[in-house]
Length: 194
Image 1 (cartoon, rainbow, N blue to C red):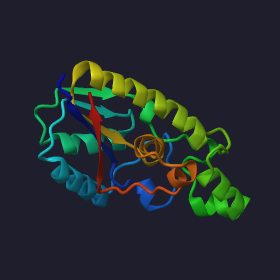
Image 2: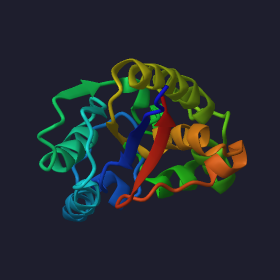
Image 3: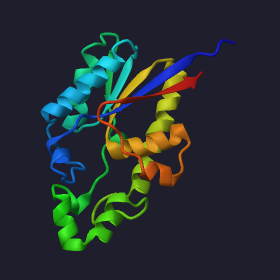
């Protein structure tokens, strides 16, 4: 029996205006900055020689617009699927607020707890633990799709949805996952044997 090697290419959308000004973005749409477009062009160049048949994005414009830049080199990619199990973490009541405003109002300790702890959600938002649950549901479905269809895929994701994705494929601890800062200009490749 022949063993096939299939590939998952994962990348983060380019920098947005909210990222640049250190605002909680979450489920709010925020435009790519000129640097964000340039970063995504770098990813597109890095992925130019790779081949994938299916692309995944979220319903947020930064994921869609970044994927559009990457796909300009990939006429072989005939299916684009929107799946919000890989959408950014909801920051609830903190969305649109500047980090410095939240620190001033609630203190650095509380800010760090909401921003960087695994299981404490911000008011009205999601913890990383909650994000991980939906991302793992996506990963399970993705692996099933690869087994069934024997395709390579590309995934245009967000910083906080990439954390549990990478934890799964890189066998990271919670502490290692929480320390990840996903770059805007580099992709991650995972090989699946079928």
